[in-house]
Image (cartoon, each protein chain N blue to C red):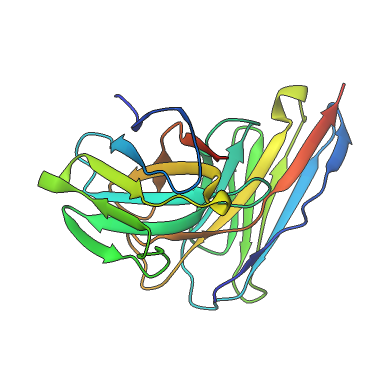
Length: 113
Length: 112
């Protein structure tokens, strides 16, 4: 069984700080990696995708991928109370392309005003 | 562009009853997924369709769950008979390419 591991949290950070969310995965040949944000009672919302090693930035969000270490992370700069949510890490199942995703259990982030 | 539509949004049934959920994917998305999300867990795939063919149903409890996607657009997921442990949110997602999947609002099922 392919696994995606995340700390369940809660991770509490003060407003304006950097929140760092981490994820490890077990299938070495996975190629596509995603971060979803899920507010309580809502469905997951795609916020970042990353496919190659290194960093990918989009506004206040930066996704980092290290395939050798099988590690993917999400940094949220200038955290806002509205960022308080559960963040789900998702990984594809090879071969890539329109495959189901394997999700971690999510990390609950709380941004304190 | 309209997102993934699902109905109903909420459903409460008693155990051993049957229930059906409906999903309409984003226009043009050939791939459709049904996921089950139990409270405190990440979504777990139940079934994947490519157009109207099943690609992956390895985690679908086929003794009680069934799904179809006639004409390669809308899909229905049925549970018959329901068990207490089926209480969850049932999420439909669709994708065009490169595994980027977009989720509908989900159906929250409570089995009493």
